[in-house]
Image (cartoon, rainbow, N blue to C red; front, side):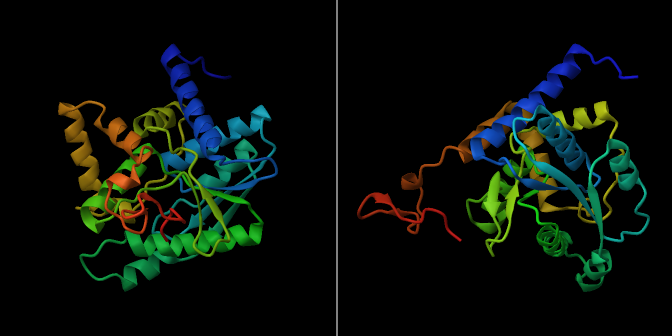
Amino acid sequence: MTAILTAEQIKLQKRLHKNVWKAIDDYHLIENGDKVMVCLSGGKDSYAMLEILLHIQSTKKYDFEIIAVNLDQKQPGFPEHILPEYLENKGVNYKILNKDTYSIVTEKLEEGKTMCSLCSRLRRGTLYTAAEELGVTKIALGHHRDDIIETFLLNMFFSGKLEAMPPIYKTDDQKHIVIRPLAYCKEKDIEEYAQLKEFPIIPCNLCGSQPKLQRQMIKQMLKDWEKDYPDRSEVIFNSIKNVSPSHLMDKELYDYQLFKMIEPAIKN
C-alpha cells in the first residue's frame, strides 16, 4: 500500500522534480533516443538521481533508456546484495562492474595522503570503458548544487583557478558525454528525499571516511557562513552562472587590447 504523503513531502518531491527538469531543459541533458547510464554508488545522491530520472522517463516527454551501473570496488564488508535486489524490485535494467580498485588505492597511496584523486581516476576509467561497451550516449553522475559550489571554492582556494562542475561536458577524448541532472538540487532536499523514499544507503569507507579532507573543510565553512549570512550558497551558485570574462584577468579568454572574447572561449 502506498503511503500518504504530507503537504511538505509533496512540495519536496515537486521541487526536486522541477529542479531536474530545469537542468535538463537549460543544458539539454537528455534527448530523444538517449541511452543514459546512471552511475549508482549506493549513496543518497545517486539513488535520488535514479528515482527522479525514472519519473521523468515515465512522463514520456523524452524517449530514452536507463541502465543503472554500479562499480563494486571490493571494499571490505561491502554488501553486494543490496543494489541488485533494489534494482530488480524496481524493474530497472542494470549492470554490476567488479574491479578491485580498493586494493590499488590502499596499496599505492602514501600514508597521510587522501584517496580521492586516485580513486576517482580509477573509477572514471572503469565507468567510461563500461559506457563504451554498453553503447550509452550519456553518463549521469549524482553531483548536486552543493557539490558544484564546494568544487568551485576548492579550486579557487587550493588550486588557484576558477572552475566548478558543469552540468554537461565531453570527456577529454571526446568519446563520452557526462551529465549532472541534480545540478540545481540542494543537498538538504536530497537528504530529506532519501529519508522519505527509505533508500537502502550503503556507507562509503573510502574517500568520505578520511579525516581533514579539504572538501569537508569547505562544507563546514559554508555551513558556518550561512549562520551569519543566509543564502550565501545561493548567491555563490548564481555567480557561477553569471560570469563576466572581461572583468577577470585571463588573457586566454579575453583580449584586453581588442576588448573582445577570444575563441574558443573554453580552456582545456
